[in-house]
Picture (cartoon, rainbow, N blue to C red):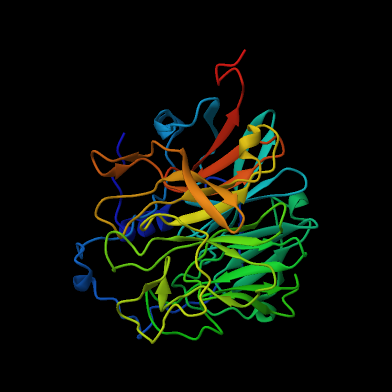
Length: 420
């Protein structure tokens, strides 16, 4: 099976025309936002030597039917097995779970938040909210669902008791005071071990000089949006971070700039060392393991920059990352980080479209393949785009596939590994 993708314009029109076949609550309307494309953006595709016709991959507005899901394409190490866990949620990416077991899923261009529940041993998908601008950022705490949609922030209290009618949320937009630009500002958010809310604010350009006091950073807040701190600067676009189970240090993926060549600069896996809150990770002057930007220049561009713990591949688009703490997988996977690599668009020969593991050794990491098979290198085409990973209570791992509108569950057993 090879996907034939619709144009972005047609997708948007088709989505707008689709009737809502599942019940949902209309989210508070978001005002029109600027494109976020900065006039300082120095992108010049012709200088990179790449095909200037390269474009992003539109998200299909309709989920693939179960019989069309690429489950048979997925390859895993011995003993691991993939199965379809949920389907029918177009464009879903982020995953957070409520205290009562509801799985909430955020999206980007689809503008929806989904809720997945179980009834009579079957999973039901509900459109919980729609009409938001890229509500990719979700977090759950004390019975409340936090929804971040670019610069809009809402809290839905006791949400699991109100899935049919979430009601009017508590709006925290003015407290969080996030910039309104859309470019690289679809959020990833999570509560840290300190109980604080960590929030990504991306660069509002591909590559440009910008105010590092506002953009290209990871922030930390109290849950109500007070006492903002910047914990990492010079971060172009992280859409996934997690804390090491032992050291409690923050690790995050970061997507590198485009139009600087097919080979990179490579995307990064970064670690924020303890005691270095506010550290600089290089953007826009320094990339990867010390590559000076060819367009945005300054003397000693990598001076004082925290180098990556590992490189994550050229244009691989690493998104969700989760450290594994479950008991189902072999001990060799304990405390490794699983990373969903969404897959390249700004590369002639496609790369990524998989899940890798990062094995941590002190402040460094090595990247190894884990879930492959969704990229057909012979035809330079793909069957799915992993977006996020989530560890279930039983130790299994969920992987969301934005393209197919499905989620895969990965399990391990000694029998599957050939051990009796």
